[in-house]
Length: 219
Image 1 (cartoon, rainbow, N blue to C red):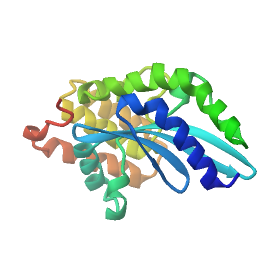
Image 2: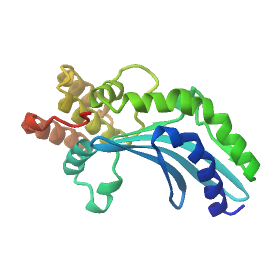
Image 3: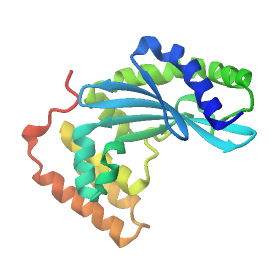
């Protein structure tokens, strides 16, 4: 199968899977993305293709975006404007939900694609979608994002993940904000001075941020 054929087969299969949950399906060059618009952002379930033709590996990523949170992160990190629209608040591996490390599905035929997606059906419908439903509320999302429990919810590159964590905590008025700052400094102790300075910049920015703007994720 060509990669376009694999994408088409995945798209058909997942369309029926998520139709009743408000997700639309779109195809990119390397993935099939199920997207659901939410108040002040969006949620995505991405079926990412790894091309080893004739073998293809499918991995699943679960993503949340809250626009105000992302806008602040882009400003702090001085992200190139070309990438603003694609920025996310969190990226979660399927491992978080399934407990299976580096879970991927190997496929070569339409039948194998259907079987692979069907094998993921329980975790997708019983764990992924319910958690995304909970994350419609921004405070719930922040609590999950900043939970100290294992496994880790967000697998964004660490310096940016720390920035996102603190932004979410500040926007919700999390009383643990100062402790999270201390933990963030510790997590970056082996990183470059540039990354440490990014954390300093983030904290300074948030201390000045207008609390009246803390209205994201409202239903």
